[in-house]
Amino acid sequence: MPSVFIKTYGCQMNERDSEAVAAQLLARGYALSPSEHEADVVLLNTCSVRDFAEQKALGKMQSLAGTARSQGRSPILGFMGCMAQSRGAGLLEEQPRAHLVLGTQKFHRAAEHLDALLSGRERQVVDVAEEARSQDTIREHLPAAGARAVTAFVSIMQGCNQHCTFCIVPFTRGEERSRTIPDVVEEVRTLVSRGVREVTLLGQIVTSFGRREIPVREGKSGFVQLLEAVQAVDGLERIRFTSPHPKGYGDDLIGAFGRLSKLTEHAHLPLQSGSDRILKQMHRGYTRDRYRGLVERLRAAHPDMGVTTDIIVGFPGETEDDFAQTLSFCEEIAFEQAYLFKYSPRRDTPAASLPDPVPQEVIEERHARLLALINRLASEKFANYVGRTVEILVEGPSRKNAARFEGRTRDNRIVIFPGSDRHLGELLPVRIERAGAFTLYGDPAIVGFSPADAAVESPSVPEPLPA
Ligand code: 5AD
Image (cartoon, rainbow, N blue to C red; front, side, top):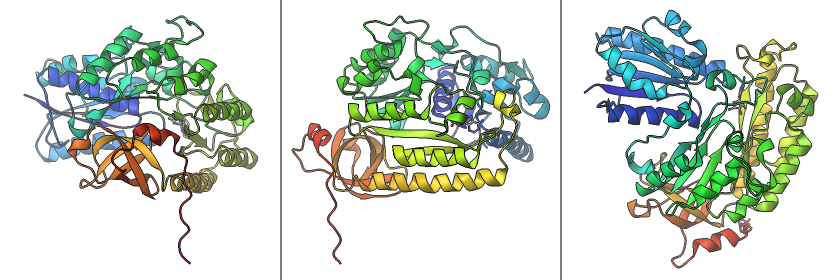
């Protein structure tokens, strides 16, 4: 039985795609290999969002081919995902020792192509065509993959129509296409029957789910209708989603927080810039005022709403004044966490041909300043948790310390505590004793405490240290 190793670069959607391909290959008689240096097939699931990610995958392919040759092995080597889609056959010219280039609408054909390559029927395969209803093919999950099976990702759509001027995704993932609500619900039901307690609904812009396919009903968008349908799945405890777009938060979605008990209080809301001038050039479709108003509405809907974001530093033409506006806006919003990206020109995107590129050393310097601010804001938020009792969903042994267990708060913070297997998949009240930079440390709270109390408990002021 041939063995396969899949290495994933980039986002959660890529992780999900890799899982679906792994599940498909298992079903077709392949085994999963623990090592890239022993596998008969190695697939790199690539990311194109920044040049850095592409270079990493290209370097990896070269080193895989080199190591295999020095070991006297000849595994099948393949690229899949975004870079495979955008570079197509060109990838094999650049990396002639690779065998497969599998595009973003063709994941479900992986086994068929690998069979042909392993049997020698084909020497190289490039399959990057568009395929109708490819969004319906990302639905197979690995059978309970150890402790992480408490949570699962569910892809609800593919593609993106927003065409932000910096972004390569519309070229790599194609037009927006949604699955049907019954199909997604069926997948969630199956996951729950296997022990999953939390699902994260995934899409490039999930708030656009069903925009063309599903009519608005009683003022509710297709996405809110989907949330309601998933809420109704018995045994599911929590629903998350990522990424939304600020334009997708109508009153229907804001109203869903609180009304839908399983919908957690977390919004990953990519801001990209705090300057209206830059936002316009990015084609983001909102202003800072509108974004601020949205965060206010979200926090009014739930006081514990966690708001996290993505920001690009050094978009072409970004002046010191534009950047100062990003700094002041981050301070004002006080994000719980932010992911910072140094602008990377992407082929075929409108921003790549804009004048006034920001010099690399200026990008580095701005990035460092913004990172310091974001870290300070995040640590203040983390410190606020000390002394509070919060509800966590226990996911399994801690990734940092296998002797401990970890779970997440409803607003998506990791809590490490002294747990055991019997806690797996439970909603547990935990008292936070200490806050690290990205992690909270807690103890299971007093027996008899009801998780419902956690939601209403207000943050307590930590005791001042003795002088
Ligand atoms: N350069 C830098 N960052 C980018 N992102 C998307 N395209 C680029 C680019 N060309 C960032 C955005 C997006 C995140 C997933 O990646 O912030 O939200």
